[in-house]
Length: 143
Length: 119
Length: 100
Image (cartoon, rainbow over all chains, first blue to last red; front, side, top):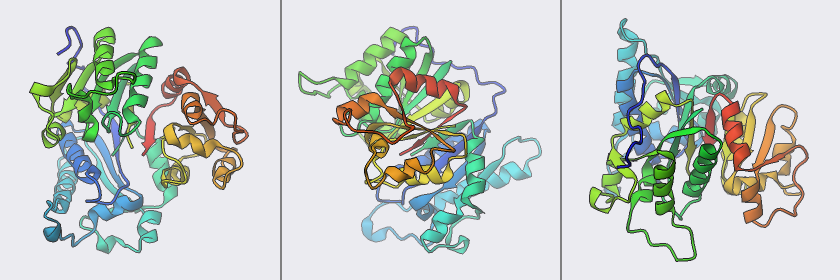
């Protein structure tokens, strides 16, 4: 460890708007899984978060993923935990944390999908509305 | 201004680590503070002290370590991403430390700007 | 917001998605292979040219030079910056969005 580097930061009272951008299909790379892990860890920090699926990222939350023949972990049920964190935050009056799960309408429709095909409840936003939301973020984390 | 940097890719295979390093260096030279560089996904491979590039090429692992010392930058490797990829304490390069994914969120909360470098 | 695009428009849809979702007045910095989008006279040049009225475009000089593109004309209106300029752009915008 480097001497004198500051490893403790002052974050008391900080409340930022985070956007987690997912643009890649699951399983072709690890980005979907490790991005999901990042979202789940972030819950403990009670920041506002928009978990957004754009382009092939919409496939990350497609229902019915069966990875048995590939022998890889099917982590798609874990998106349900994200949904749960979102709902817990909505129901807890003491918690000032707003989470949104968002799919870009153009990306979803271009890929022949609808909200019914998805494993979690989502807000479907057109590019115009999503771009305004994106522009308002404090931090954007892309995988 | 306080910067946080996230590096998503390992050295050499993608340009991300080079770009992040040059950005971090430029930021420090301009008097900004680079609080922490968080290495996630394959970015954890930047901390592998066994990396041996050709002698006439840059040594990114060492460059990051030197930046950490010169400008007091905290270099953090994500423990879960590191375990997957076999980056363990015994092969960790000078200047890096292994810690949890929460350090990335904390960095973004504390920094004025968070910049991601990836592929 | 500052958007960074690091992939060529011929390789990935990152630039296309960035341009679809960047709001009027935002800045786009082309880095790494993304600098290819700044070249004039390619089949992708119009993507940037068409948005010159509502977005500000920048390209990172060391990446242009490394790829031997320093002698090629760029799309009109693209501003060339160095790493110091990259840092200044990050400082001047509220947040950075990396399109990978």
